[in-house]
Length: 96
Ligand SMILES: Cc1cc2nc3c(=O)[nH]c(=O)nc-3n(C[C@H](O)[C@H](O)[C@H](O)COP(=O)(O)OP(=O)(O)OC[C@H]3O[C@@H](n4cnc5c(N)ncnc54)[C@H](O)[C@@H]3O)c2cc1C
Image (tube, rainbow, N blue to C red):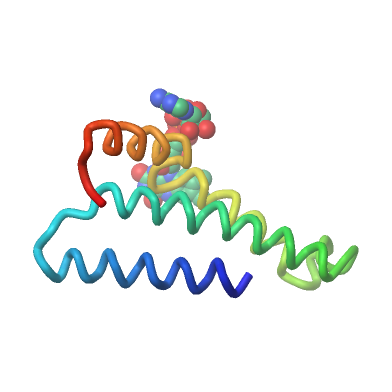
């Protein structure tokens, strides 16, 4: 969990730095969105596993967090669309 959070933070700082330099960050933001949403889901699933049946109940908010995490892979460009963008940009030799 902590490694995914730290990696996400580093990616976010890189994107902020690129924007601060007036540079584009299309590839980086697609990688970031994909990475964060996948790890958001994974982290919620891990949390649910840690809490066992309690994590599944509505009392502990983890099930709500997992539903929000799943939505994150859909809105603001689905994960499949992020993968398409990453594929297109890397094969075109753009970014990174
Ligand atoms: C919680 C939530 C909040 C939202 N908030 C907003 C908002 O504020 N403003 C707004 O405008 N919209 C919002 N949306 C809508 C969201 O942007 C769309 O649901 C999203 O773009 C996917 O479109 P769709 O639902 O029509 O799925 P579709 O486009 O029908 O896609 C269905 C599935 O097919 C996949 N797919 C589609 N095309 C391809 C392709 N070419 N290659 C590979 N896979 C493909 C998709 O990745 C997806 O898994 C929100 C959605 C949710 C769940």
